[in-house]
Image (cartoon, rainbow, N blue to C red; front, side):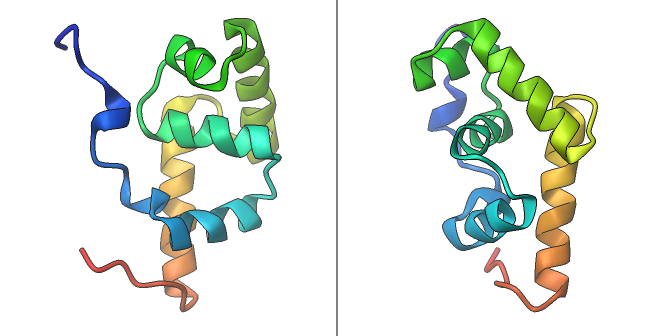
Length: 101
């Protein structure tokens, strides 16, 4: 990966589009901090990048991630991404916003 790689500059995952993300946030009942951290994880950020973005310590990020994983019953970042994707799919199947892509 190039040294100047910035995941925040990349196109966001489709489930982070505002109408879909707002619905997911409601469905998952996340705290504002959990939602912010989850968004950054879904964009591919490391703990260090999340800490810098949210202006907090890396151990604080890890604590929030652990609580988020417990709350959503997932074991790691990959499971978290798969969970968000599955929730977006359910939202669409239930008549939510249809993605134009």
